[in-house]
Structure formats: structure tokens, C-alpha cells
Length: 549
Image 1: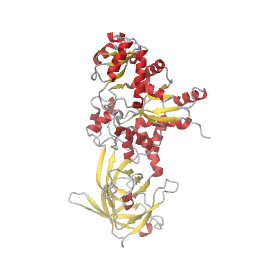
Image 2 (image 1 turned 180 degrees about the vertical axis):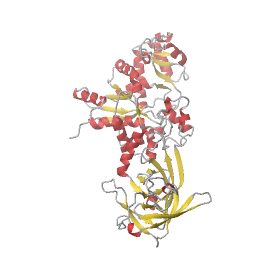
Image 3 (image 1 turned 90 degrees about the vertical axis):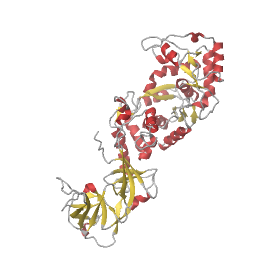
Image 4 (image 1 turned 135 degrees about the horizontal axis):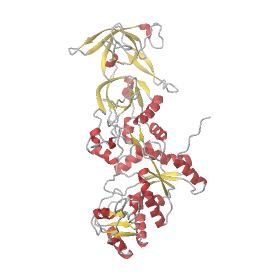
């Protein structure tokens, strides 16, 4: 009997809350800001929030935290919806913080009426100076003692557009001496005369994240508001707003965010890479975005498995990118058809092969339960093979082609190298071999034993493709932790384009949905730029971890 997997700390909390009757059902939410594309770190939060309600019942809302009109776009909303569904999850309600702008405004008015908020005319610099330091209390200013009536009047004028951006803010009146600096009269509304992607020009004041977030959770009756660890200090403020407004008591819980080696997770830095054209876009296959991973060829199953394996913790840690690569290899090993493609070709001529060629049968996936079926592979006198499969002066334990050496051609025959031809630069261009007709795969009666097998493509039937070989985007494990600009550590070899790769005819009709193992070369998928005239394949991952660091 297999050992039952232990619960993480959030699951323990939920089980206790449900057993005690504290909540009738579990309600979670995933609340991205639509100011960029989601990345692998968000995938962890998505899998957690949706996975919990799949396990315990209840439901998960998708709520876009669209309180900053300057950085938010409908493009990002659409991409985030697509990413969540691609990962295999579906929300119950699709909501926006902007749905609650009227209610949030009413909450702000309520705080003013309770003498718990005031309009402050101080500049941003003055507010920062008055807040004090972690070891010194803040200093209240003269605006803190404005009357309720004056604050109501000024806040109404802010809403009606009477003041320019930055002229004043609405601050909660809490405690300027609190050891938690976030409790030192935080700003809850600021003026922004900016067009909002949903509400247009209806509003010129917008709530701050800390004010909008907890109240939006409460409006939706979210039972467990799950955030990453950087929000631990915000929890006190989250609870204060809910308590003073006397609304549904949503509770915030924190877990460690995902930090991944050889990449950056900051949306600001990812946007920098896009804007400075250091990558081709948000879905560049080297990016840690979900759309980039999808284009690279990662499967939703592999990402969900990765998130499951890393688990949920209370302490920050750095996860090896090699674990993510392990998960996709493990998934594709069971799914991907084995096919033949020659990335760095030289010609092999079978000098004693006669006739117009023949059709061989190849097994698609020996790891699949049904072996993945079979396919027809044309074979002939002239083939493309990999340059690296021939060595003029073979090293010890060399089991591929060399003068006098024998090797098996995958799905085909054993051949022996008789001689080779070089060009004027000394590069080998052709390898001449003889074959043994009785050594055909599946019906070999030759009695010849060889240790090496190589792949090939018939020159008469080969199709030409472009292949993009991707590697880690950065040369160091933690670009954020290094001195200087993180862009200084970009890997110049993170993409290699091979524009004349020969593929077997079977791949000419490859679809975007499928993944393939190029035998001995790695796992590949069709890129979205691919056309019938020019197929393009991305390397998802190599067959084994070959990173030298």
C-alpha cells in the first residue's frame, strides 16, 4: 500500500477550518494584475489556488487586479485567461477589481466618516520623510487632524477631478508609531487622470493595491486569500481594513514564491527584455512566461507536475531549472513520437545498394503502452547522416562510423565504411559504405554484431526545415543576486538557429499540438512561425542535462 502524501501547511489550515465549521465551503481566487504575461511563478500560484478547490470542493475566482490604469492592457487580460485554461483550470467567476470601484469608494467614505481616513496634501517626498524609519516612529502632519466634514468634501473633489495628479491623497489614519511601517497611515487612494482599459474616464482616483485587495476578497467572500511571502507585512493592514469596515472576514495566508535558477521572475525585468528586443517577445521560448514555455513545447502536465514536486513551503528557496526540464523529459518520453532529423548533415552513399529504394517501418514510441503505432520511412542509396557520427581517426571506444568500422542504420541495415571524400578545405563531405542485405532490422540473419546505431534521412525524400536550439537565458544561477545589470549575464548562446536541417517526410505534416523526439538529439515541437514551405522546430529540451554552467 502506497504511503499517503503528507499535507502542506495550507491544506492543514483548510482541513481544520472546514472540519470546525468555520466556513461552509472553500473559496479561493487567483488575482493577477493585467500588466504583463504570466510566468512559471504564477503557474505555482494557479496550481495551488485551483488545486485546493479541486481537492476540497468549493470554487476559485479569477479576479484581475486592475487598479493601475497606466500599466494595464486588455492584451494582458486575454493572455492570462488563455494561460490559465491551457494549464487545465477553469474559474467559476471572472471578475475585476474595477467591478468594485463604486463599492471601494463607498468603503473609503465610510472610513472618513469613522474618522479613520484623511486627505493629505503632502508631496510623496514629504510623506516618505514623515513616515520615519524602521527604528524611529513617524511624525503626523497638520492634515491628519482635518475634520470629517472637510475630508468628505476634499475626497469628493478628488473624485470629481478638481485636483491634478499628485495634488493630494487619501490616507488611512492608523498609527504613525507602528513598528510595521505599512501601518503608518498608508495611502489608500491616489489621483490618476488616466484612461482605464475597462472603466474609461469614469474615474480619476484609483484605490491602492492594499486597499482594493482585501476588500475585493471580502466582497467575493474568499475564505483563504493565498499570497506569496512578500505580503506577510501587509497582513496586518489587510485585517485592519476588514475589521474597521465590518465586512466578511477573509483571511490572508502566505507561502514561498517560486525562484528558479538561470532566469528572472520580475515582471519589470521581463518587460525590459521585451521592450529592449533582447528577446523576440513575451512568448519567446527562452522566457519563463507560460506563453513562452508553451511555445517552447512544454506541456501543461509537465508544469503541473513541476509545481507538485516543488511543493508549498513557508521559506524562500531556489529551485533548479533542471527539475523543470526533468518533468518535461519524463512527460514527453511517454508521449513523443521518435523521428529522424539530421541537424549537421554529411552524405552517406551505400555503394552496393541497387534499385530505387524501399519503404521501411519505424516504431513511433517504444515507451508508450501501444508503442505509438508505426510509420513508413523511405530508404535509398544516398542518405544524410550527422557529421558527428563519422570520425576520420576514431577515438577509443568509438562505436560509430570510421574507416573500416560498422554501424547499424536505425530501422534499416548494418553498413561498413569503406572510404570518404573531403572538399578543398579538408572537410568530409561524403562517406562511402557497403551494406549487408541480410542485416535488415527485424529480420537480421547476418550474424554481425555492432555496438553503434545512428539515425539518417533519405536524401531523395528529405524535407528541409529550420531548427532553433534553445538553452538557458542567463549564464549564472541567480542573475538578480549578481553585481551590475542583470542583462550583463544574458547567455549569448541561448538560441542557435540551424537553417538547413533534413527531416524525414513524416515530419512535413507535423502539427503544433504534437511533440517529437528527434532520435539522439532531444525533444522538439513545431513553432508558431512554421509554414508548409518552411517548417520550423523548437528544441523543447535536450535528451539529458548537458549544461556545463
